[in-house]
Structure formats: C-alpha cells, structure tokens
Length: 429
Image (tube, rainbow, N blue to C red; front, side):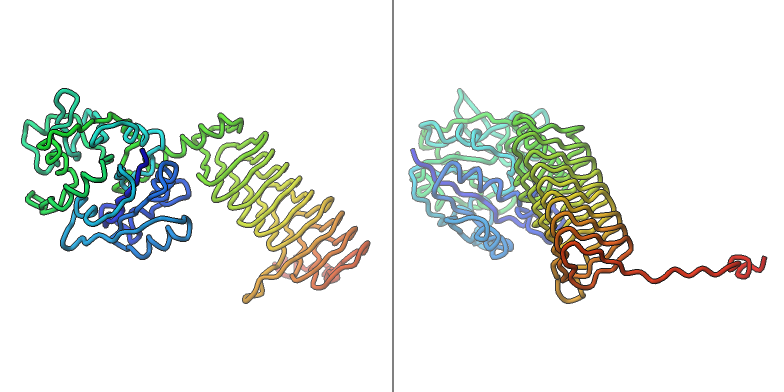
C-alpha cells in the first residue's frame, strides 16, 4: 500500500537556545530536518512538511535542496500542539506516516516496520529504564489502549516504562475523521495527536505497537541532544565507509560529512576532517588535515594541510601547512608552508616553501596559471593575474608581477648590502 509522509517541523525549539530554527541545526553536514526528509523520500512520493516558526526560512532551504515537497503552515495560535499541526493537512495515499523533523537518526528500514502491516494505526514504542519526559503507552494484549502525556500522568501511569517514540502510521481516512474532533482539554491547552489513539480504541480499531530502537527514534531538543545525535551519526557514517574498504586510524578522532564519498583504496589518519560534498579516490589524508567540498584523486594530503572548496587535486603531493583554495592541481608537489588560491598548476611543477599566490587585490580575486615542469623557489610571491609557462624557474624570494615565458628564469631581488661592524656600533660595544 502506498504511503504519504507528513513531517512535523513547526516547533520553536526554545530549549536549543538559538536563533537558528531547531530543525535547521546541522548533523554531519545537513540540517536535521533534511535527514528526515531523505528517509521519507526513500519511502514515498507524497511528502508534506508542516511549518510555523520561521516557516519561510525553512521552506526556502528545503526548496533549494529538494523537489516536489509539499508545505502546510500550522495555525499554531488557534491550534497549538501536534494535533493542531495535522489540522487541514491533505495527503493522497491510503496510509499516512507522521514523522518529526527533529529525528535525524531515523532510518528507512525502521520506518518500514511501521508501514508494512495492516493495522489501522501503528505507533512507535520504546522501552526505557528511565522514561522521564516521555508520554506513556498503555498496552494490553499486544494492543495500544491509551497514551498519556507525562504532564497528565497519574502516579501509577508514571511507573510505565513503555513510552511513545512519536512516529505513527495511520489510515488516512481515520485522520480525516479524528483530527477535526481533537480538543485541548488538558494541562497544556494543546491539541494532542495522541488523542486519536483513544478515539480509535473506542471504535474498536486495531492499534499495533511497534517496538523500536531508541537510537533511531531519538529526538533532538537541546544542544546536548544534538551532540549525542552527531556522535551516533558519525559512528554510522564511518562504519559504512570502513565496511566499503576505507582505512581509518583512530576513527573516533575523525569527522566525515554525510555528503562525502570515497572510492578505491583510501586512508584517513587521526584527526582528519572531511566536510561537504567531497570526493576522495585512492588517496591518503594524513593527520589533522581538513578537506572541504573538493575532489582528490591519487593524491596524498598533509599532515596538517587544508584543502578549501572547489579544489580538484590529482596525482599530487600536498605537504604539511599547505592551504589550497579553488585550485586545479595535476601532478604537483607542494611540500610545506604554501598558499595556493585560485590557481591552475600542471604536472611536474614543484612549489617551494612559503610560496603564495597573491590572488586578492582587496576587490576581486584573480587566477595564477602555472605550466608544466615549473620550479617555484621558496618564499616567492606570484601576484595574480599571472601566467607562468612551461619549464620555468622562479628564483627563491622572487615577486612575480607579470607573465613569464617558456624556459625562462625569473629573478626579482634587492641587492644585498653588508655594513661592517654594525652590530658593535648599534649596541655600543
């Protein structure tokens, strides 16, 4: 049976103590809401995101990254709460899965457990040793009979360890029937989605509890929760890539963005950070190096190197304390202590220590183009825009301010001056 998905993302998230909407806080490189959207996209072609707080900001972020997402704005003033979020939401399939936008760890496999059955309603349930803070789920003879929010629990109900994980799959016609009947006669004066369970019980419908892993249905409500979810997500990402053949030294010290990918024989040493849509193919990233939104092929980087966005590095050695930004390097050696920004450098070229491509004049960025078999001596400055053709030597300490033709030597130095006995005169010795 086809399933529609509704993702609830309307809350203010005050416990995050941030101006950023809760669902836009990032986990492994993506807003937590995006992780929920991607799990939903693997399940359904009809996805609706319910918004209220900072609705336009969140909507624009979604539109920029995904197509064919529907939006519904909650009337949170008149109908607050999870039940209010579902007021007037329209779905097209016979079953509707209701997710929370602050559950970034939920998996497609876990959601199938909720959708792949014939129950009128299935709901996710977790058994917790310490259920404090969660709504309690009362179960009799494998059927859900009642859900009570903690704020409304009696002392006996507080002893129950079966808690509501907050994800439901409901036959869509039941939502159309029950949601308009919700009321706010409770301690918080909110419209609770969980009240549809009581309505379904009165109608003798089949309400099936699906016991799920706490980790996958973990909600994020604070910066502390965010850090815990990040750790779990990172463990998953690294386990996946190590299973695919990536070697990691001290993987707990490594950070890998959820958008990154690896091919072939890759090695990541301790302290490595991989950010954004980075592709690493048959390459070795040495200790404490950072690679961001770039592609590395048959290369070694670091230790303590930084590859900034829009760099393409092939068959190249980048040493310690070298920074590369928006550059195309093919068969290059840059051993240490250099900055290569907005540059194209071809095969066989060697970049000495302390070399800088001076790419910014305070208003615009300019490109440095270096040909094949070019030797750039230490502590040289290449003032862009500049073209250095093949088979050129740049003497150490040279400031290159215009193009250098093929086969030439470029030297730019102030003649050295020696003043005899200056030390003794200066210190009056």
